[in-house]
Length: 378
Image (cartoon, rainbow, N blue to C red):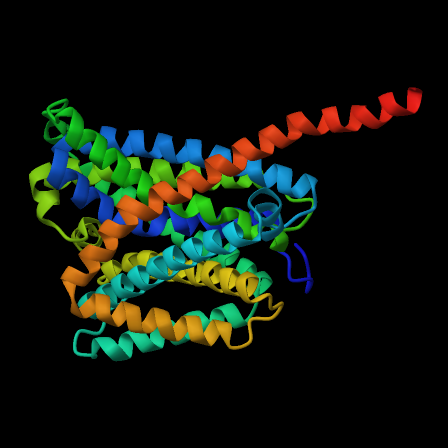
C-alpha cells in the first residue's frame, strides 16, 4: 500500500472498479432482461458480458502502452488525435460521466426513500448524497482506495450470505423454457448489457493515480470476471425463486429477495436492511467514480492541476440533473436513449481508433528509426 503519495495499489484499484461493474447491473439488469426475453436473458447477459470483456481487453492494451510511454490518458489522446479532437473527446467523456453520476444518484435516492427513510423529501436526500460524494472525492484517490478496499469485504461476505440463504429456495423447473427469443430482441438486450459495462472506457483515467508496480491488467480482469459471475448467479437465483415472468414485473428484484430470505433461528430480524446496505454502498461508490471521471475531464479541459471549484461545480450540476431525472421519468428515458444510441458507440469508436492509430504508429516508428542509420552509413 502506498502511503500519502496520492497513488493506490493494484488491489485497491481492482476493488474500487468492482463497484462500477456490480452496482447497477445487479439491480437493474435482471428485471430488464426477464421482461424482454424471459429466461433467454441469461444468455443475453452472458453475451453482453463477453462483449464487455472484449472492450476491457482493448482498454488494457491502451493502458499498457500508456504506462510504457509514461503518459496519462490526456497526453495519449493528444498524441494521437491532436488538440481540438482531444478536447471534443474529453467533452464526450465528461457528458457521459455526468449522466452516469446523476443516474446513479437518482437511483440511490430512490432506494434510500423506498427502503430506509420514506418520508424524507427527495431533494434533501439527493443533496445529502451529493454532498457526501463531493466530500469523499475531496479526501483524494488514495483515501478512497483504502476505504473501498476495506468495504469490499463488507460487500462480498453478505453477497455470499445472501446466496447461501436463497439457493435452497431455487426451483430449477422455473429456468425453462429457453431459446425462445428472436434474434433482434436478443441482440438488443445483449447490447444493453454491454452498455452497462461501459465503465471500462474510463479506466485509462486512473493510470496516473496507480502505483507503477501495480499489476493493472490482472486486478481489472479479476474484478470484471467476479462481477460477471455474481450477475449470472444472481439472475439464476432470482428466476429460480420467482420465475422470469415475476422478475420482469419487479423494479429491483434483488432487494425484494433480501426481504424474503430468512436467517435460520430468527435471531436477525432485519437482515433485509443489512443486505440492502450492499447496494447502498455499491451505488454510492459508482456515483463517486463517475463524478471522479467528470472532474478529471474538467481538469484536463481547463488545464488545472487542482480541482478547485471544479469538484463543487460538478457536484451541483449532478445534483440538479439527478433532481430533474427523479421528477421526470420521460426526461430520464430520453437521456438513457441518447446514452445507448450515441454515447456508447462513440466511446467504443474512440477506443478503437486510438488503438488503430497506436498500431499504425508503432509499425511506422521502426521505419523512421532506420532512415537515419542508412543515411549515416552513406
